Structures are given as structure tokens and as C-alpha cells.
Length: 302
Image (tube, rainbow, N blue to C red; front, side, top):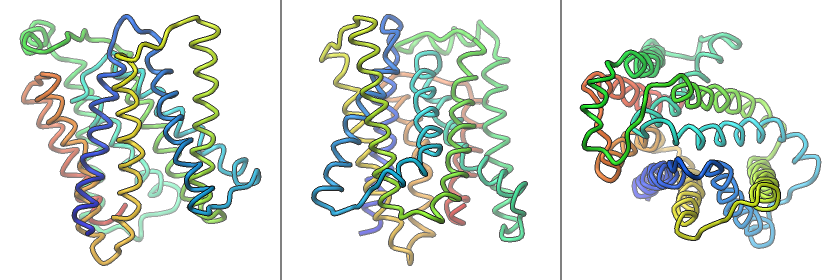
């Protein structure tokens, strides 16, 4: 069962990447990232209601307030990630964003020491960092004519810009900070209660975004544009559900973790197949470094 749950998590999270990209890439919809936050918040709110009223999970104001800094880091990172999808290929954005696990490991090494890490695990951390940084360097230094040539067959053309790379990097930094803080906070909280607190906070963020977009900015929610966002939100939540049960099988964690943690490779594949994104061999080499490093980190459950 662990194998199928791992595959479901991989497919759902990579599917979330794909549909989030489709839902947020419009240049004419300047509030698409806030609408995406609304979609994810609504789905998470429904899941939180299920956990509270059917699953029997207990959540108090104390839990919500204690977990709030972590929730804000995660929500902030996702919001910036959704905004970044408007300016850069998913093939580039996803590996950079998913390098946050390596950054958490670096923070752990710096603040808590690295006695528990084997040389192979440290090598994987270095590989991901080299790949993520290299991916940014390759994209930033690419010749404009070569960029235009490889994007000729794609659905969209992306120009070189600081913002295009800054947003996924900002996601990586905030997500890594959230994960690092998460690990510390969960030493005092129940994981189920903390997750529901996070989902309720996301629901509150969704309400704020909805009020801002619809009532303040008077922007419309068009079903055709919003559908991919909600599909992405459902995939995100379903992936989280499958992930929790997949890693619960501790006997097979060394096999399930690398499968799930390599979902950005599937995101790159979907972007090539469905979004017609085409990268240079240098891009794909850096992505390969990231994927291999993440997979090895998954084996060590970093």
C-alpha cells in the first residue's frame, strides 16, 4: 500500500504544480495568485471541517496562535510561489522551490550541528544547492536569442528578469524557514491539531484575499479561469493526505520518501508535455542535480 500512496502523493503534488501554473500564468489576471490562495484556502477549510467534525481532531485558540508563525511562513511562501508562476517556466520554478529541503538541512547543520548526517547525505545537500543555484545562474545568463529560439515552440514566451528568479527563491527561503520552525514547534503540539490550525489559518487568508479581490478591487471570478486553481488546490490537499499515510509505514520509509520527494521531476515532465516548455541542456543538467539530491535526501529522510 505504501507504494501506491507514494505514487498518489507524487502525482497529486506534481499535478498541483501543473494546474497551479495553468491557473496563475495569465498576464491579464493580475490577481491570479490571490485567487489561487482563495482556492487552496477553501479546499483546506473543507478538509479542516472534516477533520474536526468527523475525524475528531481537537484544535484550540492556543494551538492556532502557537502555530501561527509557521502557518504564515508557509502561506507567504505559497503566495509568492503562485505569483512567480506568471513570470517563469514551471520547469525552472519547481526545482528551485523544492530545494527548500536542502536549505532546511543547511540551517540544521549551522544551528544544530551535523553529527547525525552521513557524508552521502551531506553530498546530497550540496548537490541540491549546486543544482538550484546553477539553475538560477543558467537562466539568468542565458543568451536572449537562444532563449527565444527554445521558447519558439512553447505556449508562452518568458523574458529574462530579476523578479522571475527572485520569487521562487523567496518561496524556497520562506518554506525552508517554515519547515525549520515547524520541526521546533511540533515538539510541543499534536501534529493533527497543528495541521488543522494551519488549514484554518489558510482559510482565513482565503477569506481576506476574496474580500480584497472581489469587493475592494471589483475583480470578477470567471469559472473557466478558476477551475484549474481549484483542481490544483484539490491535488495539493490530496497529495498531503496520501503523503501522511505513505510515510506512516516506517518500514518502507527509505523507499517511499525518495519517490515522493522527486515529484518536481514529474512537474518538469508535465510542463514539457502539456505546457510545451523547452529548456536548454544546461537547465536539464541542473534539474537532474536537484532531483538526484532530493531523492538521496528522501532516503535519509532529511
